[in-house]
Image 1: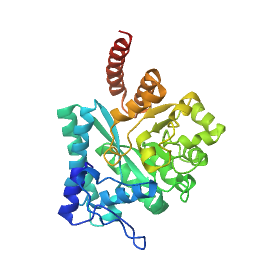
Image 2: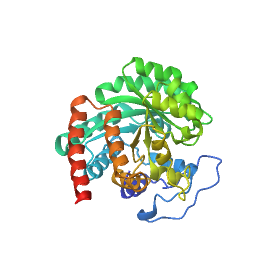
Image 3: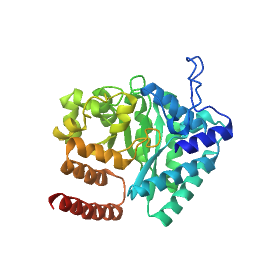
Image 4: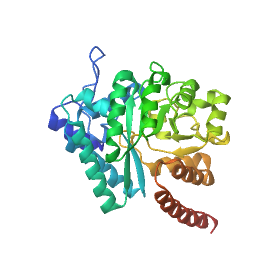
Length: 330
């Protein structure tokens, strides 16, 4: 959500732009200007900020607005196809009376207009939140299956890796896969290589969000390579949450040298004050242009787009790559 939109909705609904759960230490009550509304330090502070954003999305139209604004920014960055995470469990946690069905209807309507007018195709990944437990995950899985006709193509898994391991969610992921949904999972971001292993072997994840802790175990690196499972690498996110030190070169370089398939992503671009172009620029600065072009091709290959969409993206990338490499040689 754009910072200005966050501030506007927070004012409209009378909720603060900071969040703390009941019993936690009180949050900083400093009134921040829009330009610093996404100030936070560390992984837990990011989660609190994400919760504050979620509290401001109270009506179906709010979700459609955020999608439309994301699309405007993405199109400016040359994005042709996007798979976006949606989190009905989080919506319901903060807004018990929210009409989730209407949210999906408005998201699909907005996405269709975006594709028709701007050429950006959008599909949705229904994210399960580990912290809410398997019962809630099962309910959300069945919801995701019902929403396949509203452009839901996959199921994902986020939240606290250490306390809610992959094995707890085998059944929801089995049901999702059997129902025709793809499977992805965040793993190896705030927990170790076993989290990555579990996401692959227990959940059938086809891509892994972050996943850099696979470097802790050569066997997990080999598992990723042998199964051709792509890591969705988000450098700015990792630096801002503190899971990777800003004084270090991002582990994407070491992962690439190890032969692990990588794609570049922007996580929550507004919250992390970045965009996909910025992420690719960073990747090129540490891994080189040739590797970064390879990451872009891999992103197309690892996407869940249909073959015609993949072909169109590959053609555009090939032309742009030729122009870029030609300019470098001249």
